[in-house]
Length: 166
Image 1 (cartoon, one colour):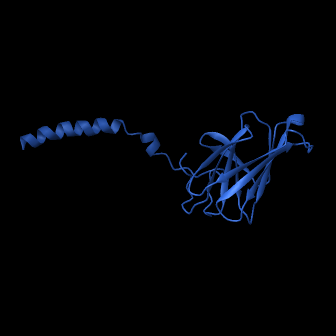
Image 2: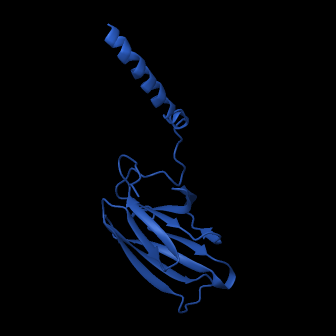
Image 3: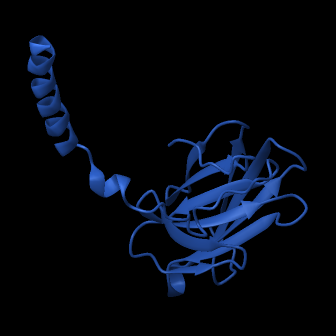
């Protein structure tokens, strides 16, 4: 009996000290709902494209884009689908330096490719016009640098509505 008492006191002390190191502030916070930009489609035929722009960039969003924070960075998000939303576009920059970027989904079923086209926002064809194709294999997060100007990440929707690990 005496031996049991001798073990209880150090054990209680160890538990009390351990409880001091539990991150109670994180455990007791309510779970926040994902923002519109963080929401993942449950449809596996949807390609979710996240566009990360350079800071202090003037932008004009396409009609099917959402802006929000993803992993602590400002991003534009669109979902491309062959039946509902095959293209999206945006403008970067101002005045004579503005660029119009169009992203077009290629294919009718996954795996898709997307063609990014760049041209001056004023519509004139110049040497600034360019095209870049990116393939998006299924089951993986794909990253790419577009025209040396901005980064994208893309992945397919999933039934769990979970974002892939970055």
